Image (cartoon, rainbow over all chains, first blue to last red; front, side, top):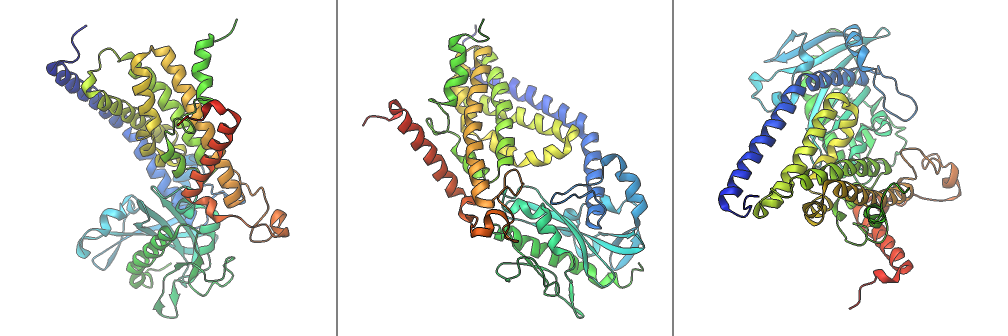
Length: 244
Length: 215
């Protein structure tokens, strides 16, 4: 056995280890990448459809439509995929692949905002993607509005919020509260606030623009408020010109 | 014929009771506080650590004679990190839903002191088979405490178990809530995990006096 205490041995060992582990990880990552990208694409379609109420929810739990059917369902229910850039609204059949995080950090003139128009049982929906910050990491989602800017459904997800607290933004009891809330207060843009102590835990008052916050997750809740208010606001000027 | 020799059985059984990594060695407390607000998260974490610790222990044990002692901690970190990343990638490709639940834990597993502790204390000095058993035992001991803490925190804090409302509905006042019971929101916060672990340590040491250290 070689002397494992020698400096030269240590350095060679470190180099070999880095090369071997690096190659192993690079190989795993690149060979699995196509499958992973595909999974992420299906997930996005499932999320968009979830927001407009196309899901397989049973009581209390979140269930998407099966991955195998999502592509067909997506083209069936989503009538238009639009991109708003520089004040112009254009059709773009790959709008759902746009990474909203990247676009929001761009200059106004280069920013492409994706928007979806869906139709279910004769009713039309605008579906707006959302992106913002929670307590630990990114949060994102989709909100479906009808022609009067009343919320018809939302979907939220997060990267690393605290399990049992902030992570509950993707639970039914939180997401379902948004349905029926009004984004506009008359002609004034109001958004939706995740509020503590609005004395309405069952969310019976739908016209106040407030939903009940999750106890112990104030910062995640504030993040959801900020995410909805800042992102949806960008779309409001264009929505009235888009024919449903 | 016994499946395991007495010594090997000790490797698995000791960490479950009188040499528990959390309550006796006080390792891995950080993740025990962070993720035990829900029973499901505790179970997922326990299974993940079981996998990483047993496989990692075997890998380190196979490499124990060629690892330069000066950089052994770095080597251990690289092994854990590589294992966790590979598992995460494979899950993302073939079990996407599950990987979303797990992603929170990836960072926590890499920095879990039980894993580093067992590599350093056991795998570096023992053969692969015994290291594997040691990994299983310690991860099970860790997981058992995690599940006890997760169980009591979810039950007393949210009135649910694995998401099911076992105590009735707190808003519509059914079940236990009808007679005035309230959830203790404090149980959902990390400090209560520490107190629950403290209670477990207290119970364990008063049952087995030999565990109490002399001054």
